[in-house]
Image (cartoon, rainbow over all chains, first blue to last red; front, top):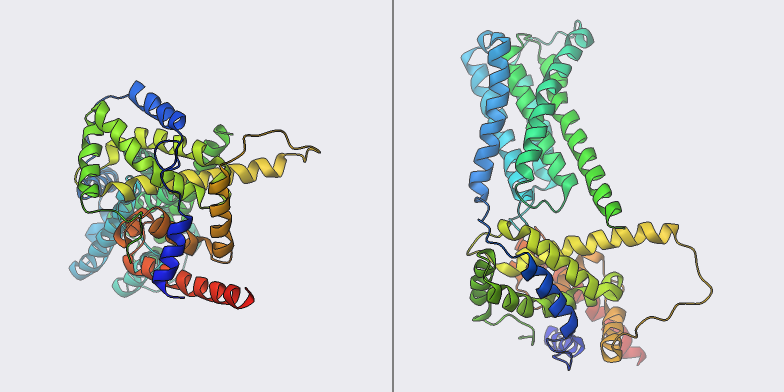
Length: 239
Length: 189
């Protein structure tokens, strides 16, 4: 059987314009929809383009991360050599741009391809690799005792940033809150990492690879979980 | 291979203007948009087994969501993918909701009376069901959007947030499987 024959067979089984008005849709249903829509018809201004939304998210991300670091002190930035800065900060910028694009796409239905698993794997592996290349102190002394405070400090920045991200996301119409939560969590976590890179003077590679990157992982997972809960609550509310 | 439901070139720009009018609270544009898109949406729900019984309810729910989300439509962008992306999630939420209810509900001995669905529609849907039964959900959805709702490859790609290549691949795999199913059916018949 050829594609043409299959098309013709499909076409035969597709509903045609019937006695009930518009091809298979009952007049009563159509009228009810129109009545409901017209009852609440007000002009709306279109949401900004995805590029502008990405820019807004990036500005918010950069502002929170750097403002907290400025407040706490820029010891980390001062401790880094120029080549280390040139490796670490552009990598953070690229990862956060990817997360911001993913966030902006979740705000509008049919706004383009979603970030695939390759992008997520790239982000998850690129940052630790950059830290491994940029920092040359491979000591693991006081690994946990020095690491936990950094993780907590990063999360202290990531969580309020995440709340702000959600407020921005709510300006759009998110269809899948778990995906949106993951993207917003990752971006908020990256704000935490930016703050840590500016503030934390610890030069150990494993410290940054594990504890700094963990801020992104934890906040992305947290965002995903909260998004999933939000979706479930929304579905339960309509039961 | 033109299907009767394929979008005609005059149609899509019309939808864009209607959608713009809808955003600007033009009641005529809103009514016309609902009239023009509803048949495609209903077909989309009708030709998927798990949403068929609720096609009218889902149609209404989709329009309520479209109404709440109308500010997210970008003037000049394709309208059908935007609406169908919302419809997809309406169907998905319905599926999740139904599964929750099914897990809780008890079987009754006698089925309550319910309005009989249109016999012709049901026969057509069963015929389609038989053909689509073995297809994975992703391939079935792409096929319904392409061949039943009459969307283009680009529109389906946008509505499903995937690439055109991925849509083509899924459609091709679906055709291959359907071809096999129909060939086996033909030999038996």
